[in-house]
Length: 398
Image (cartoon, rainbow, N blue to C red; front, side, top):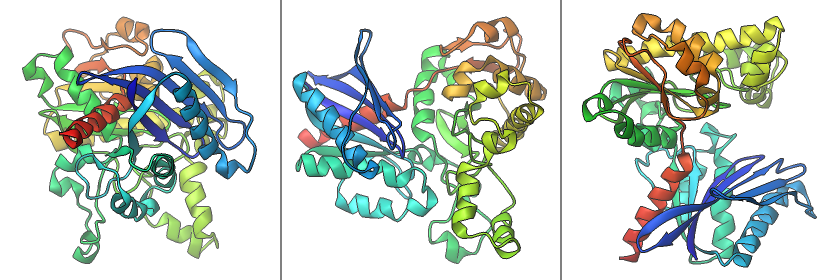
């Protein structure tokens, strides 16, 4: 079975999907994930709409830094046993810099993407590992890089700009935005659930999860986003603080003697929901907790979402719709209710019964009389990666 594999490679986990390619059509056949990559890798592979094929810990020899290669070897071996012939690979890359669309992945692209690692140290270096592995395993395998920043290339140029000297702007220091593959998927789904007029209206999409961002969309294109140059700003996240005073890092280093590594650890691993609560980075656990610190973390999270909703509504010069997506947005009725109350001034009137019953499915959860329609739409970044990969593969084969 000729197939393409979609890889989302992180520092401690891998998500992947396998799509069959037949007669010019693409179909998802398998879903896979690897957790605890650096300690005790556990792999799960499930056939779509069927039984789990593999669900087990992997016994790997060698240093943890080599586990990613060993895991990918395991996946390839499993694919061969199941007569799956990998003819293309699509990779999720967080920061695409100047790339405004998906591109064929080659060494020249790799070298450019490496220069962007300082802007996304938690994601970028690991996103590139899949390409390097497949290049060694399959010398001529067709590979594609898809970018979380590309969808935001249509953002208003003023909105993309920082008030910095031109010399820095020319170096590419500007707002890029992320979760673009998720927003692109939501934009592609809107016409399925709304009529053409409503689908093209002024809509804010909130991708809320361990990483959280928001995007203002009009005419199905990104107009503005909550996050900027790096994957650290904007909303508070699981372990990241979101926007903080830009002088904070200087203060910690200059006055308290912190190193750059310590500041980076604070911003990327010790802040956000975990940092405020001191309990967990998991929103579900915080909602269940009676600890006042958990409540504070939730309140800050919701407050900042409401502030960015106002900011993005100003970018749009109005608001017609609001969409929740991402792990928290799709599953947490509590967060959806709290956010909706905070932005009721924008015209949001939630249907509490619909909201309480909705979990990880497409659902309109606003009242029919609400001035702003509110939807929950589960995202699917992997299908977008597969689509871009397949489109470029077909062009390549012409």
